[in-house]
Every structure is written in structure tokens, then in C-alpha cells.
Amino acid sequence: MHQQVQLQPGEVLHIGGEASVQFEGERALTFRLIRVDQRSTYDGWLWLEGYVLDPTGTALQRRRIFVRREGLRPAIG
Image (cartoon, rainbow, N blue to C red; front, side):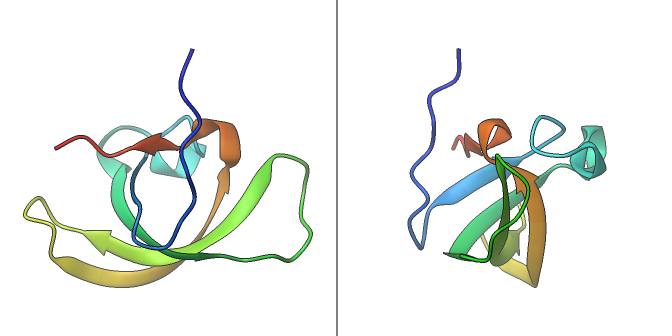
């Protein structure tokens, strides 16, 4: 069972297939959270705003992504 991550600004997350099929396999992201959008959506799903990071931790692109809360994991490293 996976531990639920804290969704605080600055948190670095692994966004993979468990979060959404669009991030399966090589499309997985390392994502530094800016904020969680508070708008109502489907139960268990969230809009996150943040930065896609490269392997060194440098921000490459700012994005808003739609993901399952249960599928979010802390980034390792």
C-alpha cells in the first residue's frame, strides 16, 4: 500500500500511470507542485499546477495536470 503524499507547494512528485494513463511508462513526469486547484471535479481526481523537472531538478515547463489523488507518489532522489 502506498503512503499518501502531502500536497504542499514545493513538494516534488512522481506522476506516472497510477495517477493517469496519459503519464504511463516513458511519459511519466517529475513534478514540483505550485498549487492544487480547489475547483470541484470528479471524486478522487485533482487539477495540479506546477513545473515538470528534468533529472537534475531544473524546471522545464509549467503545466496544469489532471490526476488521481491515489496515484500520486513522492519523487525519489
